[in-house]
Amino acid sequence: MAEWIVKCTLMNQQQSKEESIIIQYGADLIIENFQKLMIIIVAGFLIGALKETIIFLVVFCSLRFNAGGYHAQTGWGCISLLFCIWGIIMICDKIFVFSSIGVLLGLVITTFSFFIFLTPQTINSCCFTQKTIKRKKMVVSVMIIGYLLISFLIPQYQTIIVGAMIMEAATLLVGLKNIFR
Image (cartoon, rainbow, N blue to C red):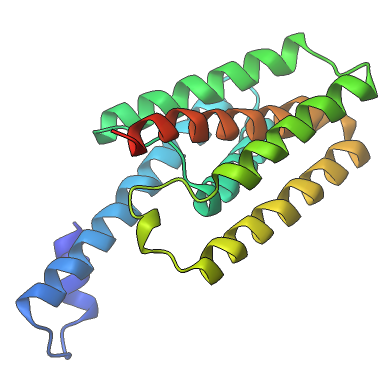
């Protein structure tokens, strides 16, 4: 499918074989990631937690885009891990309520520290300039503060928002192990 999309979109443009391969790889990634998101969204719909699922995906994926974290070796490993993380958050949403502001702030401050010290956590992070790294850390910081404010304004989604932040921070820790191999 990605090959067909690339051929249709680049029909009148001259591309080298190498450029076409790179463009097709990008199209493959977009399609694969869209499929993963749709699997999770359908699962959320089926269990009656569509709104919660979308909130989880927005928080988790937006942080992941900037911070990085552990990456599974295969597409199936990736969707399995994402499905497990989503499932844990959906269960926690039914079980936990942050009744103590101190516990909530402690979790957020710890998570915030992980993001500040470990972002970006990707295989190609050695290719980032210091300016890019600072920008990624700043974006993640603003996002965490924004998500925290939203979780206070809409407390019924607090567990999902904070849980997604904690789980993404956990993937940073696991990803750290892979970087030092």
